[in-house]
Image (cartoon, rainbow, N blue to C red; front, side, top):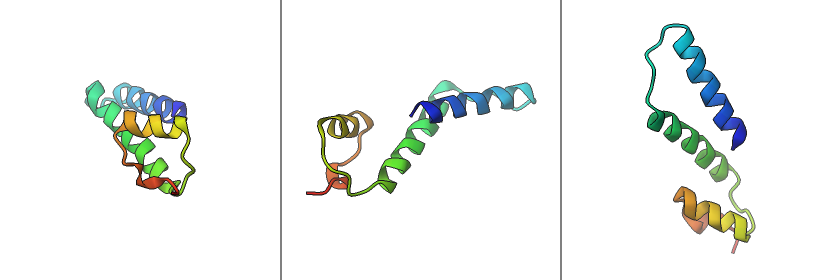
Length: 68
């Protein structure tokens, strides 16, 4: 999660340095969350733990990614 955050902040900084129009923070946040959601969906069939369950709730993911 930290890596995605750092990457998108770095990418936005470079875009601004090289003359691109700045994007608002909510769009950058959505990009970060979508990358994390995609990564989680790639890791389907994870075992259910308290941490995994709470992350799904916070990120608005369904619990069908877990092995039952």
